[in-house]
Structures are given as structure tokens and as C-alpha cells.
Amino acid sequence: MVKPQLPQFPEPIWRDQISLPSFPALNDSIKADVGIVGGGITGITAAYLLAKQNLNVVLLDAGPVLNGTTGHTTAKITAQHGIIYDEFITHFGLEKASLYYKAAEEAKEFIEHTVSENNIACDYSKEDAYIYTNDDSYISKLEKEKEAYERLNIESKLTDTIPLDLPVKKALIMHNQAQFHPLEYLKMLLEDGLKHGLTVYENTTASDIEYNKHTSIITRDGHRVTCKYVIVASHFPFYDRQSFYFARMYPERSYLIAGKSPEKFPGGMYINAESPTRSVRSAKFQGDDVLLIGGENHKTGQGKSTMSHYEALQIFAQDHFKIDKIDYRWSAQDLTTLDKVPYIGRITKEDKTVLTATGFRKWGMTNGTIAAKILVDNILDQDNPYNDLFTPARFQADPAVRKFMEINADVAKHLIKGKLEFTKNPVDELARDDAAVTRVNGKRVGVYKDEQDAIHMVDTTCTHLGCEVTWNSGDRTWDCPCHGSRFNYSGEVVEGPAKKPLAKIEEHK
Ligand code: FES
Image 1 (cartoon, rainbow, N blue to C red):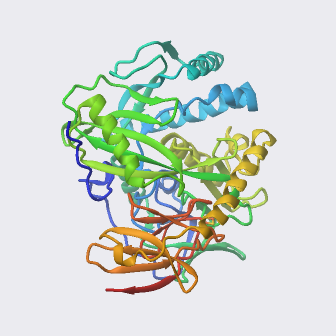
Image 2: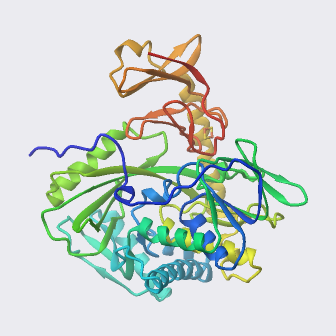
Image 3: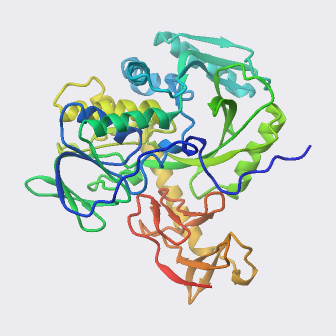
């Protein structure tokens, strides 16, 4: 069997063939009622809702809008966030577990209602969501999760088979979930926001917040947006007011490929319980049915060669779905909080004007939507039943403390390990589009040779807290294993918490 080729460059299927509006960079200081940082699902949904309330809303994005984690999602709209409800009932009690479920349901209903009210052509379809396993040790976990579903009145079924031709011993179905084209949906919200006076600036990096009479977002170019409220929806909060979000979350990368299968897809959205993760759903694309296959999660900067993750998915696609051409490949970064519940609300307990939402743990379509609703209610001074559940100020001792220790021990390990590893002098041996780490004058240096033979050298010391970045061959980025900062091959920040680029050592032909 011939292995299907992978596309040379990563690109999510959602961004292909869609014409999104573009916006200028901010080149002045301005005022607004609400300044939003981050043009993903949370930022755009919040902007849409607030602009409809006749508030003067300004949205900033460090790149083009809808190109972060939202643009790289699997776009499942579901309350089935892995095997989670039995654990939540044990750790937080039935009431909070039920609130978490209701929040996801409310997000799903909001999306469904918005799609039908505005006739959005985004291939919205209702699907059953499945968690399946072929591993004996997960069978009892699925059975316990089914009991949790019953306690929470979730419409569900435990079964021994699924409609896909995959080896399965048990599966848990959550009925009436959904999927869609996330960017077609968010494009309409964005356009509607613009009609209601929303202003958007792209390629505008927010770097700080200042507190005077009013709160101001300060951009990297020194401009400011002075506003009554700030929403930090930049995936990793670009600003954390000493709340140490980086130590309260860990980043994971996962991978997706898409291609046409010769076989008819029976419907449904699937994810397995065990490792390595495999997630399968179909999507309509230019009139064709394509399969989206995802998985291979690992902590950022800690995996094997990034291309090998795509290759593992490629083999799975061919073995089980006879896919002989992969049209798209892309990867995403997700953040998980200490207790697996997102942080949504005031950035610190005392701070009424700066709100944030982060830590969606791969389930950004529902978590990002409910986050927008919670933050908007806070700004409009309306009660929201989910404030306490999601408040970033919480600190659940169990299991959070243990996890906190684990995460930070792991960080310490990588801080030291990275300092010791390097190759001797790889520059001469580097192939085009390849990278290695070497030492120049005692400094650890990352070297990338591009397609034109130009060499790009950066200091591999992460500008956040000094861990050593590693090369991600799939995305051509330098990724930090400690808190997930990512930099492009020339050192520019792709993803925080780092704010400053990697120091350039030299660049020559
Ligand atoms: Fe924290 Fe790199 S992201 S040290």
C-alpha cells in the first residue's frame, strides 16, 4: 500500500476558500467602551453581542482574525468533553458538574439559534457524539461515565458497537450534539458586529494593560485603547496581573488531517478514550464529503518529531478509511487548567474592568461561546449562573495542588534538560527547510535553513522564563516545553505567554 502524501505546508481546511474581511493595524490611540484582545470564537462572539447593545467595541488581533486556535479546531459543538462528568461529580459535586453540562448545552443552543435566526450557511448539522474504547481498562470508566450521565439527565446510550469500521469494545453516545464550519459561522458574527459599529484592527499586538482613571490596552507599537472594560481573549492571556496563569495551565498540541474517503460516512463524531487519541468526523467541503482525522496529543515542545504525528494519523486514515490523498494538515494548541474547568471572569478577584477567558481544553466551540456570554453579562451588569463555577479566582485544592506541583516539576526538568542538549555543528549538514540546535560562543542557538538556503539563527532561550525552545518541524516554529510559548523560525512570537521575540543571533545567505 502506498502511503498518501502529506501537504508540504500546514493549513486548516477552514481557512481555505473562505474570504474573510481584512482590517488595518492600529496606528493611533483611541477610546472605546470595551476593548477586546483576540479575534477567535470568544472575542468575536463577545464583540457581536456587545456591539448589538450599542456599545462602542474595538477588537485587536496580533495577526489576522480567526487564525489562532479557533481557526485550527475540529469544530465539534458538544458537551461531551471527553470522560469528564464522573470526575467532576467526584471532585466538585453533582451541582457543579450539572452546571458545567448546562453551560455547554447553553453554548450549543446559542450557536444553533444564531445559525437558524440568521440563516448562516455553515453546514450546521446535528450529530451524535461518541467516546469509544478498544482497551479493556477503559470499559469500566465508560460505564461509570454513563452512570454520571444518568445522574445529570444527559440523553445517552452505552453500546458495544459504533457505525465506523474500527475495533471497539464499548462506546458511550451523547445524543443531539452538532458540528459546523466554524469560520463561516464566525464570519457572519463578525460582519453583523461591524454593521453595529464594531471596529477591528489586525496585526496589532497588545503588550500591556495600564490602570489610570480608565483602563488602557497598550500595543507593542505604543498606541493605546482606553476603555471601560477589557476582555483578554488571546488564548493564553497576554496579560495576567501577577495571577500566574502560566503556572496554572499546561499547553498541549494536537494534529489534524483532512481528505476524501471513497466510503460513505455514516454520520456521528467520534473520539477514543485511550492514547493515542483518534478523533473522526466528516465535513462538507466544496460539495464533497471529507473526513477530519485528529489526535496524537502531546505536551507542547515535548513530542517526538512533529511530522511523525501527522504520519501516524495518515496511516490510520489509510488503514481504516482508505484515504489515499491528504488534502490538508494542521495542528492546534490547547490549554488545560488545573481542574480542567476553564478560567472565565475577572482576571483577578478585585479587578472589575479586566476580564479573561482561557483554558478551554480542546472544547473551544462550547467553552468559547459560553465564555463570551459570561463576560458580556459581567460587562452589562447582569447575573450569570456560571460566574462562580468558572471564576479564575478559584483554587480547588484537590486535585489542583497535586497537578500544580506536577506541572511545575515538569517545567523545572525541561528548564535544565534543554540547557544541556545540543548538536555539534549542524549548519553545514542542514537540509533545506530543516533546523537544529548548536552552540555559538557558548550560547545555545537554534538554526533554521529555509527553502532559499538562508540561515536564520535565534537564541533558543525562551523570553518568558528562560526554558529552552525546541524545533517543531510540522509548523516550522520554536516551541517552549514549559508554558507553551511558540516563536516562528525568525524568532517572532506566535503564541504567548512570551511577549518578546527570541533574540536573533545572525541571519545570512
Ligand atoms: Fe514559559 Fe517558555 S513559555 S519559559
